[in-house]
Image: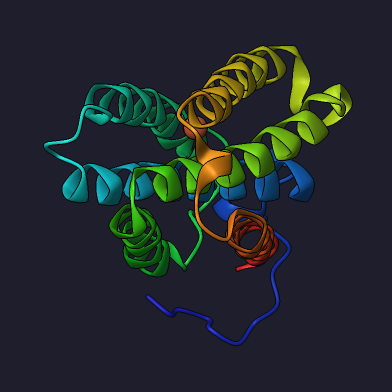
Length: 188
Ligand SMILES: [Fe+2]
Ligand SMILES: [Fe+2]
């Protein structure tokens, strides 16, 4: 059987069928990447703060990130969206960010949580405001996740995040890194 490799054809390929509008695909991809990164950040924090009284809080937040990640692990194939090619990078960078800030101390770990969760909350808010793209079901899921990210943010504040050394600098750097990660994960 000839492959006719060079011949033109008009049949849609599975990955680019009109089933998924590009913007929804980008949203799902970046959400998956973000939840993957969040899980790795908490894993890094827990590795360093395993004997710290904050551990149950960290475990609770990590468990919720796993639920969020599981949802996008289901949604990606459902919408024929491939994950970002940068997952191996977020695997390492997320853990390094979590462990690195935890090594600076529990308040710095919480400052990291506040910064990351504030960016994720804004990010989900923008998607929730576009029901024509996400649809009612995903919108509801995103609202639930957004509320949980806001709880994580508030947990960080409740545990003296703002008393971390060089808080404005640390917070600003982490927010910038998260926004860059979001930008690139939607595209690659
Ligand atoms: Fe999450
Ligand atoms: Fe979170």
